Length: 411
Ligand SMILES: *[C@@H]1O[C@H](CO)[C@@H](O)[C@H](O)[C@H]1NC(C)=O
Ligand SMILES: *[C@@H]1O[C@H](CO)[C@@H](O)[C@H](O)[C@H]1NC(C)=O
Ligand SMILES: *[C@@H]1O[C@H](CO)[C@@H](O)[C@H](O)[C@H]1NC(C)=O
Ligand SMILES: *[C@@H]1O[C@H](CO)[C@@H](O)[C@H](O)[C@H]1NC(C)=O
Image (tube, rainbow, N blue to C red; front, top):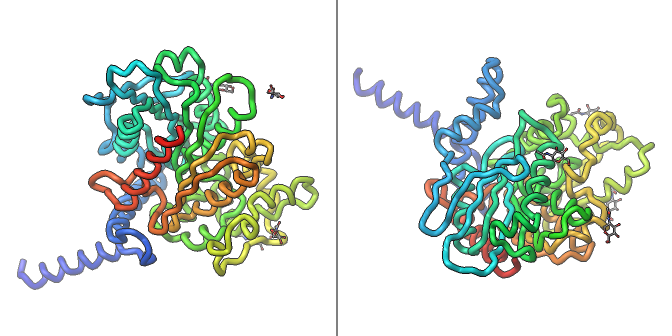
């Protein structure tokens, strides 16, 4: 080939690649180019998955999880400091990280739920495995990383029940004794969809009397908490910000609740919030996600509520789980919130879920629950797990350090 066309082809290819990778990002976002590359990789996985689904080969979730498992899944490898075992708790898969050492004292513990839209990810993935190892080492605590079953094999409430059953099983006095765990010092935690499960299980276990042992604290990392308002200021502001796009979050919700994905456009328009005025609890329910009251002005900015007068109230009749606090913990009654343990909440400015976390923190405080809230102005969704090579972000390292430090001081 003559040099000129080759050079032109190379130029064209790199322009095309840059066009694919480039997304306009706000200047306050940490390390934008790294995030663009990370996002391009994630988008490619999703494109391949969608293509396979369109061709009728496989559900896109299976394809994405398959690709990820090829590079990311790790066996239960113990190290000098942490013993790692794969086990099951009440029939739910889990990976347990136990600090090694001669110490005879009872240890602290964290029950952890990984993120991934109730569909993706695993406690066996490199990023979550490394996270839990590090927690086990630094907190000298037993970390139980629960592999609840995922979409499309199961839908709500199965993920929730897996999380609840595993938690209730681990908190049995004889199981805690087996792991040498202090029953007074067990935390529940999770990120994103895992934060949703952690909040929901914390509510349930705080109010039922089935277990004598209670969680001491709850730590919710950029949690998903509601599906009634997809036009909170953070959804409006960050709809196109990697890596959790607004449309993807709506799709995760519909798949989790086993709803018709053709509802997506109605949900994006908040048409499902025009609750049937005949519903007795309509006003009360909407008040729990009323961000004009629950968010500080600095977050509301210039955004206006999207509250269609007519909309499509039948969506809620077809998908009643939209109003179920086990799916959407922000909808819990204040009396339930009041019973839950002291909370740590992490949120990121460049995340559609920012306001879910802020509203929950506010409602917990109103219920009298002590809340520590760390908000990252330069953070993006999922940043805390991106604190190890090759996807290492400064905000990832910082947020992880602060999370572990809070647990160390409060658990
Ligand atoms: C989990 O709990 C639910 C509700 O209590 C129960 O129906 C289900 O069988 C349990 N699953 C397992 C695996 O124990
Ligand atoms: C749990 O126990 C408390 C106090 O012992 C009691 O007031 C409450 O009704 C019980 N709740 C349930 C669901 O049994
Ligand atoms: C939300 O709260 C504001 C301020 O308290 C109130 O004026 C408004 O009517 C509420 N909106 C809804 C939909 O409840
Ligand atoms: C939302 O509901 C309104 C009123 O019923 C309707 O005109 C509009 O087309 C709906 N929007 C979407 C995206 O479904």
